[in-house]
Amino acid sequence: MSTIDIVKQFKVKDIAKVKPLRGGLINNTYLVYVNKLDTPQYILQRINNYVFKDVQRLQNNISKVTRHLRKKLEAQGETDISQKVLTLIPTLNGKTYYSDGNSYWRMMLYIPHADQPQMSHDLYYKGGVAIGHFERMLADFPTKLKPTILHFHDIDFRIREMNNALTNAIINNHDLNGMGDLYEDLFMSYKYFKPNFDRFKEMPLRVCHFDTKLSNMLFDDNGNVLCLIDLDTVMSGYITSDYGDFLRTAANTTHENDRAYSHVNFDMNVFKSFTQGYLQEMKGTLTLVEKELLPYSVLLFPLMQSVRFLTDFMNGNIYYHVGYKKQNLVRAKNQYALLESVARNWEEICDFTYKMAAL
Image (tube, rainbow, N blue to C red; front, side):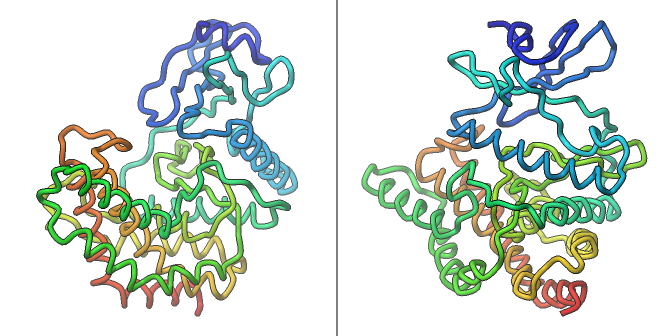
């Protein structure tokens, strides 16, 4: 079926054209134009059901969360609600997705937005506010959401995967040259911090985004965040996932493919701007244990990502796309260097977080 034929399975009229939108890493995305207008009116996406095995669960989560957010916005007297929360378009038979027998598709209203503003401390502050606002609006969500990706942020599971990968690599005589002491360093770091990570279970389960980054935010012409998008990973979890995952990417002074590990540092100014925005927005919402454990998520995410990259390297690069054989090893070392930088700044990270959280 053509994309035009797919669009016709949804409750939309006067379709003019469908154009592919580049840049998505997981799903294939298209802009849908109607009535020969110059601006798109809808988004069409082919859902990656290799990554997301249970499409019905995925769509149910998104539908429940967006309905809850819409009701909150309506109660607050917000205007232009369709610009501040995703709107799913139903199929002709009332479902939130369509299957053509091979692929799964969904449609949403297109949200007009400006380009992401230039990087600045104000931008990271606004990112913190946006994530905090998302979580606070969902703090009274009535039910637990089922996971769309099992063990997504489970460090114990990731360590088991790494151990299995090493065993299989040795059995299959994979080339592990250049790995050095990284495996031992990661395992020892995990063992050292595990008592703190185990305490995450003391925190309440909340609805979290699980893929927090600036590219998953839409901005208006004034540089303010309209809403969070890419809700595929929305599920129940701990606030440490949204907080720590954002800082893993945003506060790294270089990109994760940089082979010059001396370039890798944890940017304390980015950390402070984001943390200030997040905790100001979450004031009165977080429990005592959430405030206490929040800094440990800053340690967890570079550790976990380093483990995942190293695991894929030992498995022969079967998960992450690589441009050369040892790219995942480079990424793993890069993330471990970030973990070391976090550790060097640990006292200041804790002091600032607890001050902002009024602990």
